[in-house]
Length: 223
Image 1 (cartoon, rainbow, N blue to C red):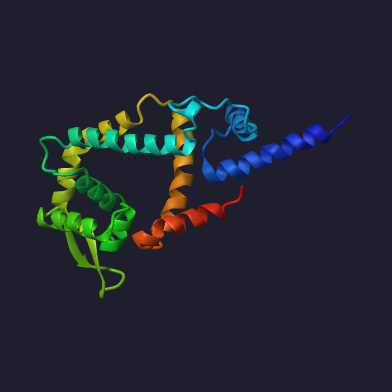
Image 2: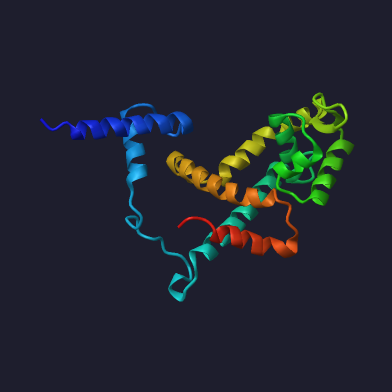
């Protein structure tokens, strides 16, 4: 009797359990295993390339992706404006900063600004506005008394909770008609993209040198 197939399948199951234990993207059963096999064995080129406007005239996939990302950012801003309409918030950045403080706890001004991928001057303005409104406060760090951190106040939690239902609705609307599986795929792709850009953002490179540095790092990637 030929046992090699059985051995290969057992090795495949072992690989699935190791990866799924780390990522947790699939259910730990036969159905999850089948989905994992399908997602990891699709050969490049099997799925036909989608059509897009201008493709026949040489418009690149990079151009299309950039356009869609810009559009999605603008759509999200429209929904955010609707979510805070009539509230105490003046901008979406106000509640995004508060959400981060509530979720991740006290942090330095620079840490908070970097978490929101803002430049320093814009981030400081937002933080100052939160402090002036009484939604955040600056205190001494419990870890290092010499440094100061920003933390959300009870008033900040209260104003955030009053608006959270609409904010959640806005988040749901932005992901639109995507299925659960499509959302998971999109999270994986955007996480990979965010990791690349965040590593460059954290280098604090000046604007004049930024594009060439990013392009240089891109050219160093395998494949």
